[in-house]
Length: 115
Image (tube, rainbow, N blue to C red):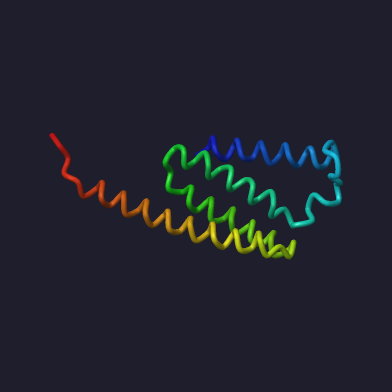
């Protein structure tokens, strides 16, 4: 889990530095926090999720939920109904997948161990 957090933090820090230095065209310093950093929070948690899922860590679902909620807040600030609806849909899918993963874990636990 440490690796996921470190890599995601480095990516977000790199994006903030690029935005602050105005290296990318159309990016201005004053726009960095226009969504109260929800965009960076969303990116951090969703990137961490991908790394954690690869390692089959259940905490990935919590990270993904936080990232999607941040995305939902950003969509609300942007007044983008597409982002809002997409975030709600993805959040629902995340919950469904978490429930399925728990069912699969319970099935594995109930299987007899071959000796």
